[in-house]
Length: 191
Image 1 (cartoon, rainbow, N blue to C red):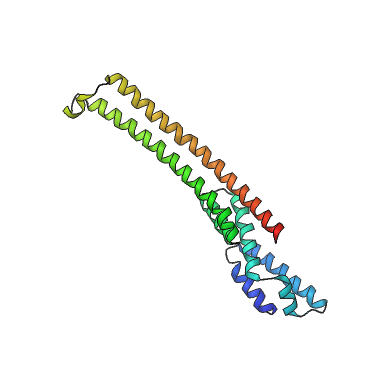
Image 2 (spheres, rainbow, N blue to C red):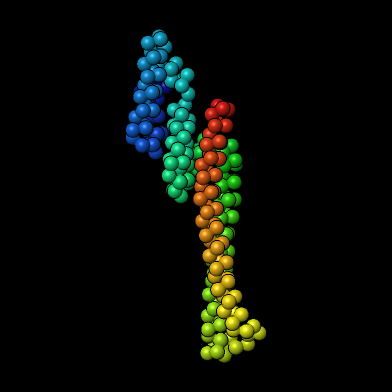
């Protein structure tokens, strides 16, 4: 692979990175070729010593997206960082995706549970208010005042669960970024 092929492949593979950052990376690799040529190496030798441009781009993509998720921990940035890290190899598919999906499932379950508890509180309130009007709900064995306070308690409990889960979600995002950074350090140390 000559310089032109290497640089074209690298540039195309870095398409997900901001233009300024991509230009800096391209400039650095052009410098590698310039220094190597001045040392008497051929373009093919330099390209072979640098490695596969697609693998280089995957590493830069992962670093870039993890940094983006660190500076702005939005849902889209977290998912881009996880996907970019998954692109580094099968090892990451197991080590990154497994815990990430498990934690997403737990967070989703907490949101569903909180919503279900709020909904049950609303249903208890409606049956308390509609009890004297609708003959179907008159068969209650619980005093209406107890039902009323139970409905308020259920709604408050559901809201507390959801509020707590919002904080847990923020902690999960920060933890995910730290975990991805740790994973990238391990990969860089291995390769």
